[in-house]
Image (cartoon, rainbow, N blue to C red; front, side, top):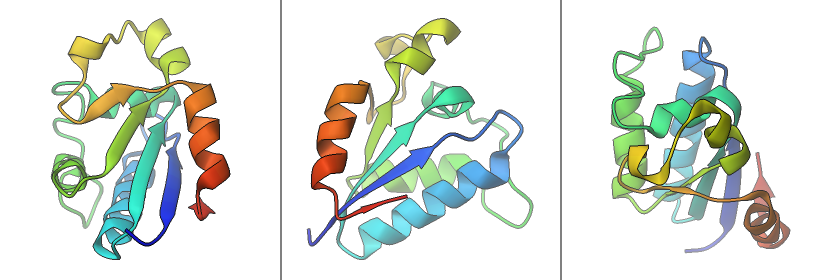
Length: 118
């Protein structure tokens, strides 16, 4: 891997296009051979729960599940903000394979070594 890229996804529940673009950019980063992590906050944490992204599709794009699956299969890191997951009742066992609860401190430590942050 050449660079470390950190992308924050803070899309609201009704902002499917914003979340989709996050995953398109993240997948492009992986295709460019970069270590890539997405830190999901706010409503976007629901996207990486089992069945949480079912039916979500922005106009003119594949379903967001396809982009999420591609990201995980290509080695992307899906980090879920515990401060956002906890009030929504999301527990580790509710997350899809490849997604983990990842707190603010380790995310900040990663950010300090990242080449680019979006």
